[in-house]
Length: 591
Image (cartoon, rainbow, N blue to C red):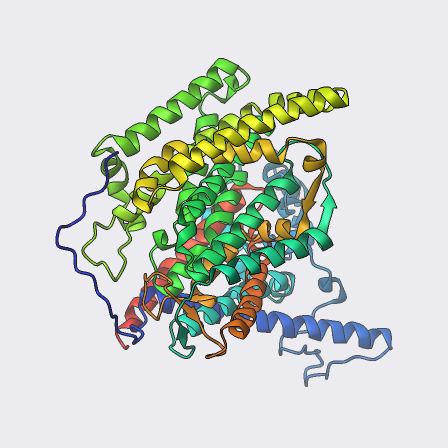
């Protein structure tokens, strides 16, 4: 396999300055953005409380608002009091705002624009001939909730209160990251590996989960949802402990875990698109939001490159690959030969991209600004080397995931047939399958897994499917194994993306250096490593859980099931981003 060239004579920098660099345009833009959001959320809360107080007072037969000299009532934020009907707001009110009674048919939220226009003209006695309306983008943007909130529309502020609160919470998380990992206010601690402690922590967590949170699955089908979430969860726990304790001796196992995550990208996305045949833009946009929303803001706020958090671009790349593999010629996806042909094409493309010299550079070179990464301790490395290395390690396993999804019904049918055998035949069949599987896994372990790091990495792309397939077979070998899961690990599996990103800044530490690897620990209780581990872990997991909730809440608000609305939101976000960045560029000269 080829690899991205490295500059000879690279210099390793052992010590880096600890002073935080001055804020750049992007950081100032993020600060401006969330300052505005905080202001809007505060106004929304004040307006909401004023209306709540007015309602309570009206129920008691008294008005809570003082009368102004002109006889008008005022609310808590100084704006004119809203009629009682305004306190119950719909999404349509937020998007399009109040309308004149005789025009409401023409501008009803979600209604047909042309029929509404005809109704409006008829109400005025005008011509009722059908005329195609001209919908201007600027007019549509002006009706968006964020625009109306910026213009001080009280109705929009109140209706968007929960969304503004979620954005504010995200801003607080980013501020926490900066304080913990950029301000220098929180000291660092060195990593220390103790094998007994490492496995004791994982063993205790697993035992607690098994004895207190083991639950029956909703389905006993192989690779059911609870089972795959559990799989992700226990792997993530080991992955995080590996980083925290610098457990280098299980490096090869971690490589297999990451391959399993990529396998799930192929398996899960293929299952969805193949079964549901939903290739809609909004569904794909929601998936991209899930993978990249949080990391986008973290990169801006912390001045880090995208590939530092390589799991995000890697899963994004293979999600795109699965989508387009099934989207092209989707009307023929029911044909087995066509699907198998698509697998072959995917394999050929992956081979060309990572195995033929020059192809990877030609394809990703134009996007170097997005995929570049240089560790500050190794400044003379080719900026595309990290992306080539990380993405190339699992260049084939996502195809294996798609193949497993395609053949999943056959696997499920085979397991059911074994379950229906008489006890002696079933035990014989399961024992034979288990013995063959364990034999294959032992061969892989003794021939591949035990190799040193660099030698193992060379074989990993071609062999990672062996332990993954073996685990799947053994985990689903009996009906009892398929029917139970540990919900504690399922819970961990649902927030893997958030725990992966957050660990860099509020569990580990990059020592106040942009783009640096998290080579030290955040130390809230210096000199007490176990107490510090417990306290930092509680904070870190709690923040990750909230980020998961905020990401989903904002996905519902910003990426709805409407391609037109998504486009308008994207246009607004782009305009705001350009304006905030320009202002940040001007202000950055003052620092």
